[in-house]
Amino acid sequence: MDLFQSGEFILNSGRTSFYKVDCDALTDTDIECLARLIKNNLPLFAWVEGVPTGGLRLAGALKPLAEPDLPHVKIGLIVDDVLTTGNSMEKQRAGRAAMGVVIFNRMPLMNITPGWIKYIWRWGL
Image 1: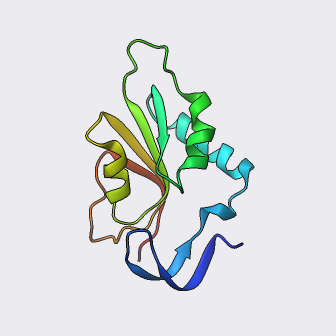
Image 2: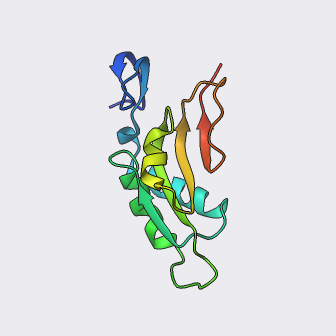
């Protein structure tokens, strides 16, 4: 399985794309490394949720790094593997106080990524 694939794909957003980023190709070690990278670059968070299904592995690696017992930490973290439109992240957040992180942001550069969502890598020419 390759992380980057070319062809014709229907994305979860319903859009057609000529490339796909398949984060299932990332190893558990890769995901654990990304979880540490995220933890070290964000404020403390009380809880973690992953957007099904792409964000579940990353959420699993981040859950032990959450700080649910600190009384001053109330914000949560919502994660996904690839951001295309932001709709899945917004649906998962459901208006709650949360930060968001995705591994890859494939949202077109002309679109503004919602301010509550950060990304590790962004694709765009």
